[in-house]
Length: 264
Image (cartoon, rainbow, N blue to C red):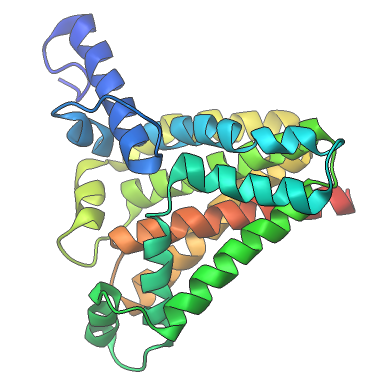
């Protein structure tokens, strides 16, 4: 019996999928969702919820970009950054901060893991968060130079691409230790990546070479950067790496889309 079925028929399947979406919304956004027992477990085993929530969050966060023809670019960009963090929250930036400190520390794997878990904010954390927020703001300025439809398309695609990258981490990643990272990697199977990857990549292929299609790819690549580093220098991923990858993927996807629009 599959995870959705649980032997309870169509009603149980639908109920478990709704629970998974609620769990994903609770983890990935700040949207007011009525959480129930079992939502977190349902979400962890259903990675297709990552890009689905990315689509919703990206659409809501990109609303200020509809004003690209009416307002100055810096104003639109600032509103976009505010909207992103109003919708998705700032808790994922904690992963960026911890990753920043781990990046600059000298030592072996154990020392880097120790720094990653340390609640003290170092200069590496400050720089990493500053660069991430600045990168998003500068992407917003560039997006404000596009037509509203193109700007929204790129922003949404960047969010979806980043979330698909997180789904890949959950399905194929190796956790460094017990914690949130292992909760994802232990619950998600490699086969569960087929459906979300197929749908997202098929949609990107259908609009290729639209900048939004490039943004999806950029978001995935952006997630791959901290994932690769964590595998090499931490022995695997963790909850902090998931948070950092989410933020880096968004920024990389948005810039990739703008670059594509400039060059194509």
